[in-house]
Length: 279
Image (cartoon, rainbow, N blue to C red):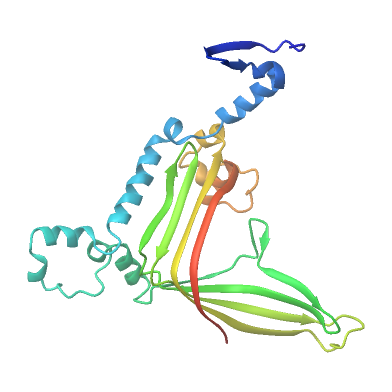
């Protein structure tokens, strides 16, 4: 080649040959070195954190094996002593007897639900949507809170399962599905020249979704800066310096600071929507 790129003949067959072209001369030595340096500075499961990988794999395997039957209950069954105990008809015995679903059932006081406020912004996605209705005014629709029922009836669960070099896989399945209640707020603001001329109108309502056969899975690529990650200590979670979260010190932000990039590479969702109700 005129630019000095090298050819290496790796094998010759009948009427064909396999040729390797040296990419260092095509792309440029500086660019290749920079790319390799960036890749080398990313935390990889097997090379940098094999112990953490084993912990996450072990936890996922343990929870998967004990979704509905705790470790204590399984041992008692093997010893044939469970039916002779006073707790044989226990309906709420927690994780060691009723597994993960039993633990959720116990922690939620038999409701199997979780309620939380929706942040104003999640990964640059806002919790409100603004649109204009002709001859009426500006409408702002905001999602305030979410309550999910049915969390104590999980069929399959996998959270932060390590895969590949720096990938994580998460999945949740519920054959019974979830009942989801979203607290919404609608605000109508008058616009000059429109029919609506009173003070801003604000109302709240609930959007209720009844689902069944819920299934969701995602695979993400996470890139933690190797140099910054290796500097993490127990003390740094409280006293370490943050470049982005100086005004909001907590362990989660300390870890986020070492995160150089994150992207969802695959996502699948399947759900049957049985009913929608506005209250």
